[in-house]
Image 1 (cartoon, rainbow, N blue to C red):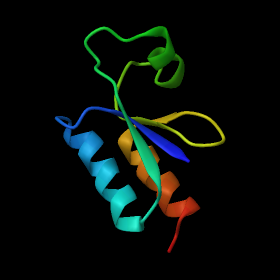
Image 2 (image 1 turned 90 degrees about the horizontal axis):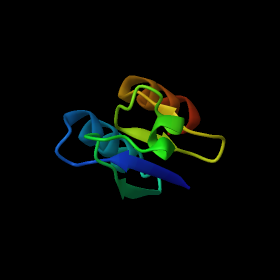
Image 3 (image 1 turned 90 degrees about the vertical axis):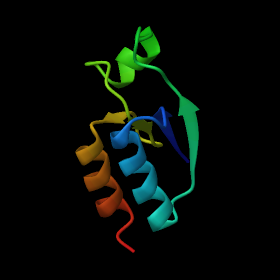
Image 4 (image 1 turned 30 degrees about the vertical axis):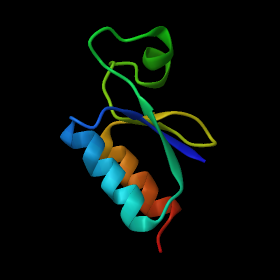
Amino acid sequence: MITLHGFAVSNYYNKVKLALLEKGIAFEEDLVLTGKPSEQMLACSPVGKEPYITPEHGPMCESEVILDFTEAAYPD
């Protein structure tokens, strides 16, 4: 299952969340604030940006890359 990390105030987070909901992709949400990035966040998003996702194969950051991934992995 995909976990979406970030916070709902971000338009980029909401763009990814909307795409996941529209495609009917099961996901969990994890609140992550970017004020002081943790080591775990930096391991998944080296620049310390949100949103990022952690699908089965490993972390992925940048909303446009995430949207491209979801379109390729879940074309229906």
